[in-house]
Image (cartoon, rainbow, N blue to C red; front, side, top):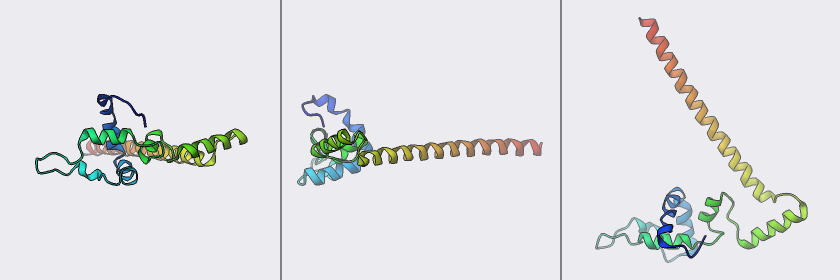
Length: 141
């Protein structure tokens, strides 16, 4: 993740944290074992959350490249800098993209295609429902 950003710019992470909350929680367990992500929702005796928004954003902003959150944002498998370098060398030597990276791209493309098919089917079903309602209305007249 990018370090050294101003605090106001970190607020842009909030929506992404909500999208990938499971990844953030898993990363906290891995990289910050003394911090419980669920403290974001727990209140202390004064009614304040145990994990402040400022601290949450700061910790997320400084997660390493191999974190699940950073990987989800980049739409790639969680890989360390060393693994990325190894894959780059493999790709340079073979002239092909590493299969590990190809697998994720293919899976992501298949998920997008499946989502598109589901949305088109839903739109068609809705169109058919409206048509049948119109036909039924014309018959009763």
